[in-house]
Image (cartoon, rainbow, N blue to C red; front, side):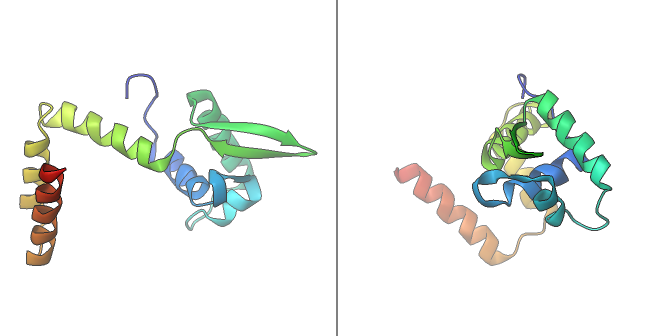
Length: 126
């Protein structure tokens, strides 16, 4: 994630709320309605949105007296970049090391292991 800064925990909550809206866009009141409890103060939310704009994750468009906020990166794209960074930083770039670490630490059920095997097998045939 060299070109974009990482999201803080609070910024991630704001982005998750924005990503959950149709078209990944909405007004601050709509974003607030999707925030987890305890919800931030409206001014705090606006501060986070300003920071997210500065970081390049959000853009806004003036609509009358309000601002319509839009995500500039999808949740899937951010997740991919974030996990790629984790893989490179903590697992020497090895996907196998990352997956085996989680497989050992997460105490996967038999059905979850089978699901992972199926995903890997299907990936190999494509």
